[in-house]
Length: 257
Ligand code: 13P
Image (cartoon, rainbow, N blue to C red):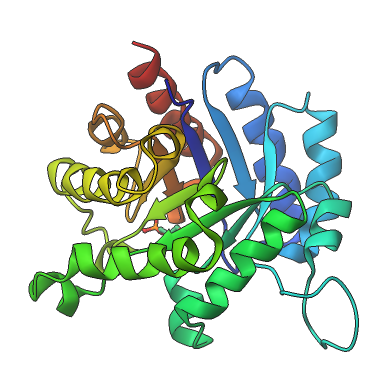
């Protein structure tokens, strides 16, 4: 039985005041939710503040981050390393988000390097994959997802996926309100798990596959009742404490039913 993981990707949103308000609100909202890992990924600048607030609030929330560099120190202006993320208490690190692939031209190979470096540093990669609208319409969804995951499997072996998280985020569903149907998402999740199972059934069985893209409190349960959807990567709706907690609770309820 996989323990669901619901993660909030705050993206480029936050201020000292907002971080305090949102995390204090979340600490209270999630206090009685059991059976789900609830992760927040604020902008890196606020990790220190977030770590302190999470501790004060009873350590129910897990701290994550939105990106990493592939070096731990040195002449890499502007970058943030796994060692620094770890130093600030972050454990779950998003890589390969479509916004980074698009705006920062990150390739499958570069994302795979990040994956390997996070593992080497004892951190949990949250590997984002997913197709564009054009690729979806051309029927290329499974092939795109396979290519993105194979960039890791072919360079590091399927064993690298042990303990890792995959987030299937169709690009056309991100921030659009046009979420994938739960049935379509389940079909893709099953194909992702089958791809991994072809290498190792055991690893496929334990890998967490989140859905992301316009997940809201209203549609969350429909995803979590699907057998291969093990949680969510939430953008916009993770910026509201009550709504994000409701999504986490929906995951706990569905998976522990
Ligand atoms: P939205 O939930 O705002 O659609 O964003 C999804 C996402 O990109 C999470 O990484």
